[in-house]
Image 1 (cartoon, helix red, strand yellow):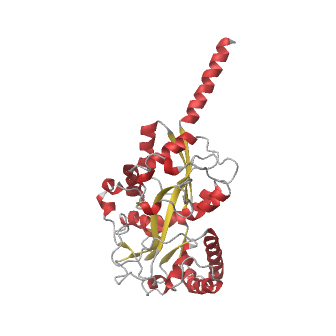
Image 2: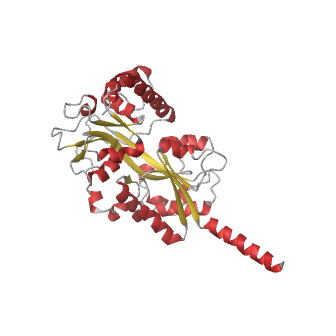
Length: 347
């Protein structure tokens, strides 16, 4: 009996050790550097178990419930208010973490987390479009290429299947990208419908594949994806439309009741180190918000045209749209797609 009790104690301790050496991460596809995660494992002895989903809506959906089972999640900034309001993330007092003051000034104390209690910044990027310059040899500095395409582009367009398309239409029309004015949204809808009817809709987790498809001449997407796709398709060029483009940011959060809270805090401090932020940026092509990380970036990333906007491009770091606006734009986008089906001629 004594030996049995000792054996049970050993097994229980082994189970505790296994749990304590794990980090469960929830993120969208093609977003986290595998080398970054391996580096974290080597330094800490903690095994990272990664769950990858298609988009940010699925990330947020994965956090709903009394216990999500995750220790770390990557969320768009405009969903943080909802996550806090619904009690889906932990208050981690981010500004007390070792390395938090590596965060560049504009990215601290933001409207969704003014006291730096719940989030650390991850990365920022832009949404516009890429063009195959071996087929279209003209200027690519206007959203007109998307909404009034020339013959060599028409019918060979890939559209990001996301409510961001509504915001691009609003920008082209000279309206505020976050508007919920129904008259302005209707104008954006009418602008989008003929384009949608003659274009391919691209799920957000398939953008990289479509960017490298030679049948597509213009593809709406994110700058980091375009940078990586250009390695396979050198004729791609990323546009900085004179009307403006979309800027977005993502953050790192700790879900409610994480199974390995101490490990989650270790990961947050790990991500605040400049060399680690640079490792992630070098992998996925998105800029980070950590001071000093540029010293560790690959030269090809540091000078990448997808990250270095040409003068006088409009890349405005505007406040994120409120959650209600994002939801309304998603609804408008769904309705646009429904209407466009009636006249669709998708390649």
